[in-house]
Image (cartoon, rainbow, N blue to C red; front, side, top):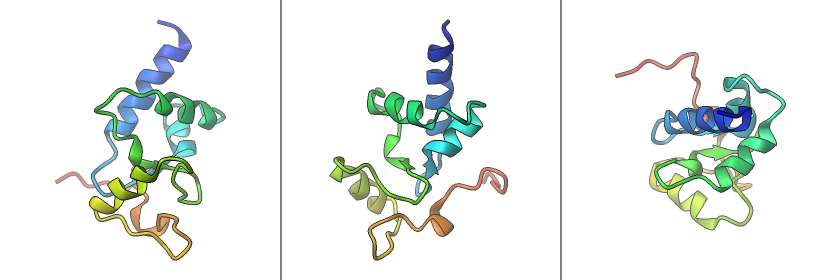
Length: 104
């Protein structure tokens, strides 16, 4: 398996683990995948992700959704994610804190 394929599988696994109603950033995913300088690659991989990968739960570091994917915000809102007045996700409230996660 190539390094890119391995990274892709790791990214998909991380994105699948984001809980309903929470978000992670491209940079956080890259960091969790032990490639902190590859946040842009995370975005490229998610752009072509197969169905079943909840890509809508990934936003930029400020909480902005993908500019040409209107359904992303709709999907997040359907999960109860609220947006601030600037249409960015409220990262203080909805960013998935992997270090304080307490599984049910």
